[in-house]
Structure formats: structure tokens, C-alpha cells
Amino acid sequence: MVILTGMTELLDKAFKAAQTLPAAQQDALARELLSRVAAHGSPTSRKPDLQRIRAIAARCSTRPVSDPRTADEIIGYDDFGAPQ
Image (cartoon, rainbow, N blue to C red; front, side, top):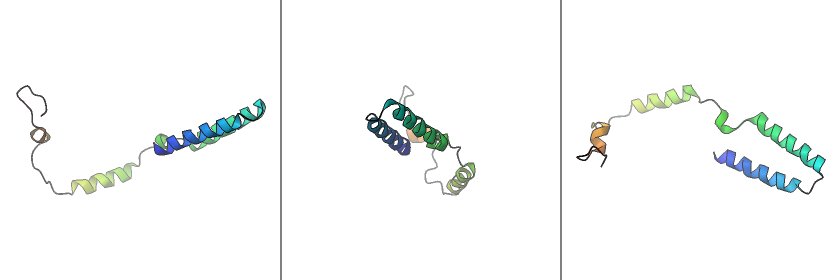
């Protein structure tokens, strides 16, 4: 998300700087900037690396259980069934 925010700020600055150019050059610059952004894609458009995720999950599953209670026992509930 930080990369996308930085890219948005950079584009905002570029568009503001381009306002001093003639309209035809502004349009050309805008088209070029947007085409370059589209060509690179956003960081959130990438598919997750399933092999890496599975490797992390495998490492986590080998860790010892430090608290044998269930999630419900850890959270605890009051007389009305709301978490404490």
C-alpha cells in the first residue's frame, strides 16, 4: 500500500507541474504517465506466491503449542455470551 500511495503522490505532483504546459502537451504527458502506470500494474494486482505461503505455514505448524486452550477458552465469555 505504501508503494501505491507514493505512486499516487508522484502522479499528483507530475500533473500539477504539467499545468504550466500547453493543453496538447498536458494531454500527451497524462497519456504517457497513465500508460506507464498501467504497464507496471499495481502492487495489489499481483497473485500471491502460494509456494512461499505454504512454506511459511509448514514452518508455523512445526512450532510447539504454547497454550493448549481452545480459542474460545482463551477469549472467555461472560454470562450473556459476549467475549470478555
